Length: 390
Image (cartoon, rainbow, N blue to C red; front, side, top):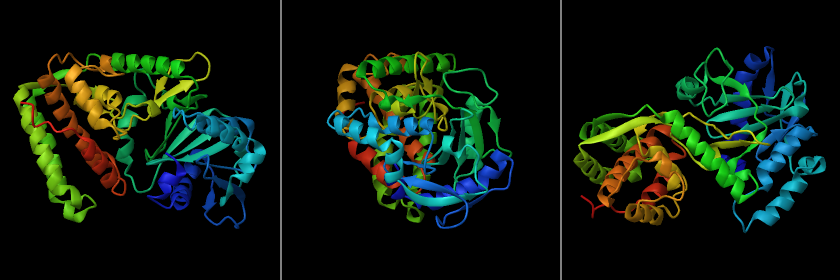
């Protein structure tokens, strides 16, 4: 997520300083002071709004390359030439200095700071240590330690899978350490053919990891449980930012529930919960793609990961048309191997109705109060009507 987007939701610098102050002493095993005053004594760290990171004034080559490569390649063709040029220039040492400004100070200074990049995110602040090839994920103060539970259950002291292992966990379970993979997120990989190949490999790896976890449950009981969560959120909407959505949310959810209840049984299985190109990491060279950000992992319907990817539901623009095409012909551009056989439009509509209930619960439970309303409104606006299906 870009710093400009985060800044619309929170004071990014204050949140970053607060998070670093809490966790750095535990990670480094030393007393550390992080001060949000750029004129205070200590090691200067600079905010680079363009490249969405914090770094020291003259970062090392590995940091410069990482920040440059994460910016200058884009899948949006009309922006690609200009963004490549800007990213190349901004990733030089002079460019990093010119495109950044003093933000906070750390005392005593961190050794090898030129090999560090600090990247704020939605729930976490990430530290990349290119000297030790280690990455740290630090949970922000406003989120409970249970936010890390799913991630830890999948990747810490667990069987190998299509993900980097977690090798160390903080005593309060609010931060964890993992190997730093020298690579790029899938949307930042140059070449459409290479992106397609990497996504196919990641999708196949996820399908293999999920295999064997399927179980059948009563459709009415499961959808009713989801509906209760949505009703509770709607009924309490007067105390939250969801208030404008209450009646509309209930009306749509009741329709979806009525469709699902006609299915008899539904199949549930382990899911990643947010499987999209941005959560696929492609190592440089010939390494296998890895799937990252497992914080939403959990048991959901068998179609959840496939529809999240294949319908691009995290990017609601155009969702209505993509869904209508799938309901009619039963084929996704990507992600078909993550779906069970759904030969008829009616079966697909019922599966999609269940997905919608789960997706709304994902928004309600998974997103912070400040980000939830606009994201959920955009999603609901693009949901196709399902009244014509039985």
